[in-house]
Length: 239
Length: 332
Image 1 (cartoon, rainbow over the protein chains, first blue to last red):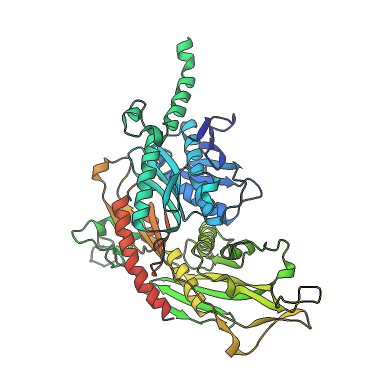
Image 2: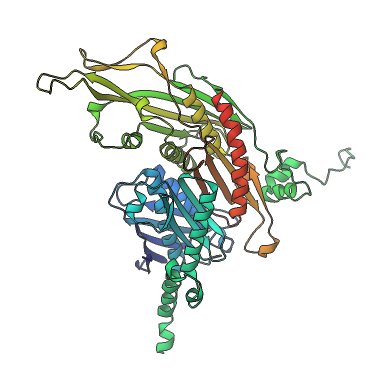
């Protein structure tokens, strides 16, 4: 099942997106460039602030850690030097999560790709200048088998779980792996995830030509963004 | 000259001035030489040798001070008893033993950086993002690595069966209480690579931890601890995982062509290197080759330099580091 992405669900934010993966749903809002408080101001580039709100309760150390992971990821996506002494603010609200109780380490890593994809889509929707296009994906290793985009059931009793994000040029932007694995397995997983994320960004037509392209998933990111551009330009054709 | 001093003021600044004014180009100038050497005098892949001092705090159950270059971290472990009768949601009987520690929260780490350990962390401030993320990363790693045997933390009692029970059943083992370990980690000095050093301090403190013999006293209906040292038991660790961090310093920028960018892997970064690199990789390995592999955790976020080849290089370096440090910790 390919994940679903809806752009601009919020009216007041500069950019927003709802992203649903097999496991989580995250609502993201991006505002920027906006004024920054003196304390956080950077003289040569834009500051990035990420706020993560869990589905219930208030954030704690776990959310602070995830915020720092997403912040450094977004720093390599945004063209921060274009907005010195400004702030880009991203708020991520988790709206749905698996009903079964997962182990803490597994649940943390499983959430990261959804957060990253939602934040990226919100930045695109907000028209913020970006350096690269990115897709994040999740994989688990279960009984020696690599399962890409796992379901709740795959996460229970898995040996290791891996979250990775790749840019369109195939650069690895994020890697979070936990569990028990060796280098060979990790390389295998990273190759599988690279293929999956590339397929999500693949040009139409290129995908069909690729061997086994269909099973690697449809280019959902490209479809969603294309749809958005067509919608935004509808007034031109209409006139 | 007017004041009679005829020596002209020098036109070059000392090294420290360049380091303060332009830390990025300063680091780059060191690395781009034919044989790159870091400002701290180390080779790019050279790590600092830590010194471990266990049992430095007398009032804790276990403690250690680990010093790695100018990073010094002290870790103290205090054990408290959690009564099973105080649990609002007692664990069900079919709960996996390995999930028990996480379910009950028997390991409570806390990282304190507001001690005046570095200019970036002012003393007396509430824990910042770095301190909170470090706390969480240590907690998550403690849980996912399963290094502590849950049976070490259980306080059980053999309960004689009453008449109503079947006569042929022997005495039943009842969990009366659990040991909760409060792991306090204080940075006394911080010069980069807080996670590796903090994790090593936790491991050294665990190796040093001694829990007194605790038993359920039937008559007083409470848990008592034996004062005899001979009965106290040392906490057993299944593994000693070692964390290794690598910073990636890169000259890549959106204003430059991609093929002009150069990158260096800096093992065990200090504060200057950490501040000037956008990318860092942390690998946690275990020395014992058990089923399923020797890697426990790989963390990296941001930056686009690191690929499979770079990662493999880092893992090789981390494996050597892991062998070296786990022998050092086993000797503690």
